[in-house]
Image 1: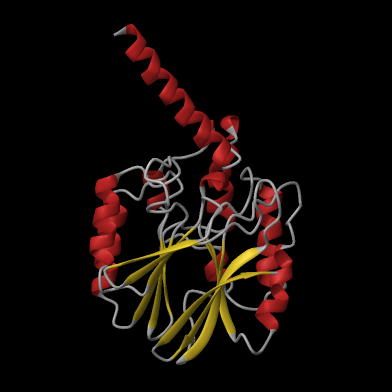
Image 2: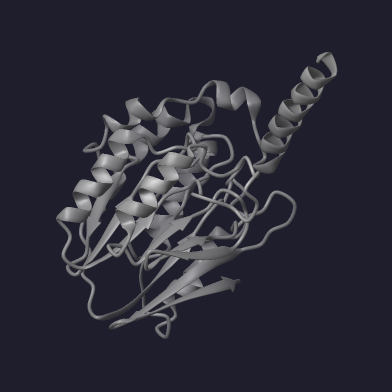
Length: 282
């Protein structure tokens, strides 16, 4: 019996180590993070989006957008994030907006988040919608986020298109946020895209990086069934896709990986009823 307990203990320790290593974990930073409930209370608090008049979009039948994740800006190093300007400015791409799926910063630093905002506002020239990630919470990062950006869970309307941004920085969505998602889908009449940081599932069922609640994952896929075009996720620094209930679930590879710089992103091309999801690297 004692040997059995030791084996269980070793498995738990090994799982924790894998989790910590898997996303450039900052233990001291995590201790200063925040709870989801407190962040959801700020749903109508907008600074970054309202200040740039980005709460609504003007989109026609043909447009493109970019999804990028896990930049991990640290000590002023952006790992070439500003290089996306060339992709955005290329008229062939017809990019109308950009979504960043979290872990914008490595440790929640104010100066690094300010640098991101400066690039997004002054260099790209299209609306940029930020999603909060677990690293963005570190070392009091939520207080910085609330001041400079605002809400972590919000809706953007673009005529016949709706963007739903969700907060999974604690690796779960929670009942209140899922109820919000279900309610928002009732009031949409066009195409819907959903964006969050943590992924619903990975290629390995034992991977601790995925969202922690199996029932929650099942409910999300049930809510989105036949009502959403695609849900975009990041966090695990990999690229793969799943199709469930007429919804495409896309896990986007990291822009900046922990070991090497990928500079990868997803280019989504919408041409009427045709949608293409392209994995790209700079």
